[in-house]
Figure (cartoon, rainbow, N blue to C red):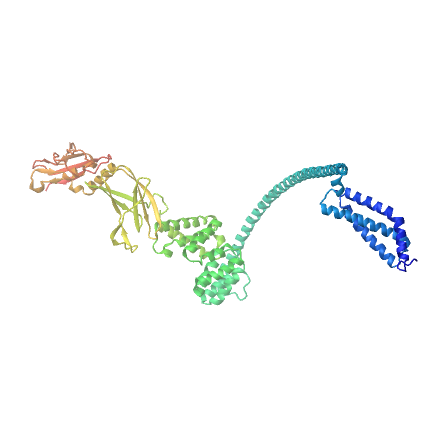
Length: 604
């Protein structure tokens, strides 16, 4: 390998290489530099060539120094790379110095600039091609979106068809279910009919069962004494009564509980057991025990007696609810009647009496055909309930008659107006009235005394109305001793009829004052002044003297309705009689066409 650094051999070798390579290497480098300048608008090729050539020159030089290649062979390449780097670097430097974006040559030679423009046409076409490609891409996207929309619509149509298919299937399914329900309903009705028949049979069996228990109880009661080892419900009930009457309340309680375990639907064992529990544990204890029994058993009698252990208003509400749910359970009506009885309440209102009578009447209605026997084991208890019911209904009388026990009005006319006296069928704590069918009621107020029945101020039983009052309806209502409102009761009022009836009542009541002989020392005169005062009730009055026929008329002026009791100044309320007259007979025909008895008056 040639030693490039030995003596004078290296310079001669370099000169030889330059003479052989320099000419074409410089020319090629110059051409490459010119081409890169012309192509500068496309890219900075001069910079690229300068960089690549410089790197190549450095690499070749290092290889020569390290003797990796023969210097004779590598020097031409080194010279070419160096020339190219120098020319391209120079061109790039001039471009940067002159800021020639289109190249140094193009700025000096217009023909070169035209060439660049020709090359720009290609770029413009390329831009148009790029624009076309871009539009094509957009069109493709739109086609894709349209395709997606069509696919979506297609899916929706398919989904709708599927949904319609499902709805059709659902309708078919619903139709089948309705058909099945109809069949089930028909089967249920048939089953209900069967259950009803079974229930009737069961009711008959229960009645027969209670009848058997009742007969067993009656037989045991006749024998007397407790059963040592009771097993049947009648035996436990018998023992409970024996222990209770002997004062052994603990064993009586155990026997009653054992009887309740059979869930027999008879009323009398449970009412007696409840009485024992109230004596021992109070009402709260009895309520607790029967509450537990009611939860365990199904017998309505237990549930009914459980209700009896509540207090007052709550008990009545529960009783009514029980009757509403079990309207044919006869013992409930007797127990409901006790809630309104005189024994329970002390003083009864008219409403209490009616409630008691209604419940007892309903209870007694079940006596027909032995309908009450199925509710009692001890028939003596049933007999006691029946006797008490009959006795109370007899005492209550016709309290249920809607035409009885209603308020009445007694009008009394004076020259100033009307005084109306109210008669009520029971004590009241307040009374009010109203003229006509609408409007507010007016309280009558109170008298200055207490009512002995209520212990409260006595309600005023009267009120006043003017003499100009015309015919109409007067409504009366009142509060009973328990504060419950009763009424209103509508009473027709006719002032003309009332005036006539009031005068007639006075004339009938005080008929001995119709005639007066020789009054005030006026001998030979007979007076009928009272008849004139109450003449509004008189149509005509016939009289006779000394027992003769009633063929004479008393002269009575017409009624003045505005001032009915004033005797007209020209009215003559007397007439003369002879000394021979010893008696006078009078008969009045009233305005209602009724006649009074013939009244006879003796002259003293």
